[in-house]
Length: 325
Image 1 (cartoon, rainbow, N blue to C red):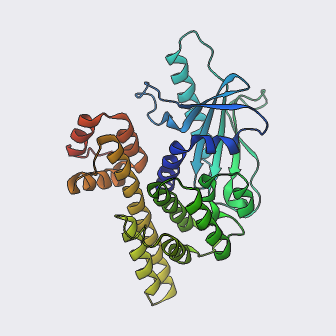
Image 2: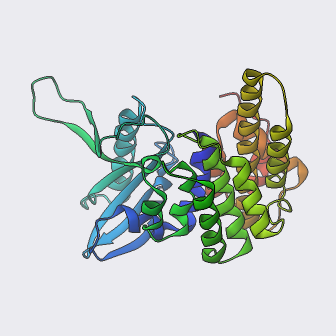
Image 3: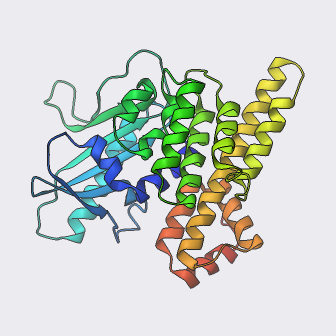
């Protein structure tokens, strides 16, 4: 899940209002105050999954978790994260009440049968009153393209390849809407990258990745092909489409190609984040270090370092040997 998670977290950080608009009850005045930026890094570094809000004038915190599937360990992860988050918020403002927290898991794939609207992690003794955590379940892959479009943002359009009724015709319209809704060429490239990464997940077996690549290229006249690493992802997909042989061998090759494509797309996003922090693109050596660390440590950990470390410390960190996990 690391590749899709890092892509979605990156977009969510750029468009927090669009994320919140779909996840907070309608007709409630909401003010987005920013991402939780805790100094309690020794407890949990990835607290940027939580947003500080003001709803009806009252402080609130929204925790969003992107999950490949609603696996058995998801309730454990949500419960653990809430403990880290509560402790961090409490330590940052001693004596002040901790704002109410709500957790939402955004699920990208899984069973065909409708998932429950809520999940829970119970920790109380059997027979005792409930103690633990409840969380909302937003199974975006079980929604339709129209339902995702109704959320009113290009952020949610990147999930369209996951929709149960996704078709080439519907995705062509999605590509056009992203083209019109993105504010810059850089943002369009990032949105299209997320769109392609979502297409590799393909929970319904639509098999639309190759067609989607052609659509984006036609609409953008080579924008992605001119983008380092993302262009390699396109070439890889095209070459994969030309391969022949036994179907089983083809499927294995496709899976490996999709994994490589996702890794390259994530490396590009991390490179963009480096450029915003440092003011220049990474050198070849720095880019190689970013990629190797993402593979060894997970893309999320590398993104955390890119966000947490200042310029000189970040450059030193990339030059250091990778410590075994």
